Image (cartoon, rainbow, N blue to C red):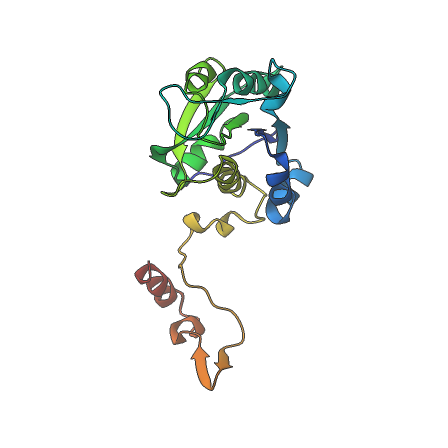
Length: 225
């Protein structure tokens, strides 16, 4: 896979009612360092800021009946407009739907070439679908599902995509070979000590990994996938 070269931070914009659900993850570990080192930037816009009523109400009952509430379209679109104000370059807007295309590493590589990525994080029963149509006026709209489960909101999928993209940017992981998809890797990994004894049973590292024979090790890793 190609490395993505950049001279400016990749800007992520979260349209969310719950910034507090996102920022701890995006401030920790590798993603946090990427922000500190200006490999990426993260901003938030709350749709409640853009409602027309004095109560800050952002949801209404669904047309056609059914349980729950639906987030209104205009507050979400206005929040996206505010996030992108003055921005120039390639803009991607991400819309989440359980029935959409599953997000993959290939998608992460493609999105890593954009300048701004906006996540429309729905809650309740989702966002009025007119917002999806309107967001197309602001940039390239991508519709994704992240896994086959249904989540409480779009924040978890947005965090997963941010993570997947960020770790692929040059300098974020230190070495390009740290990106598993760019080297021979295995779903099974081991570290020291060589033998662990637990409840009177010995658990050993597979012998092939201790041989130093790289071709055999790569064969073992490939076979285990």
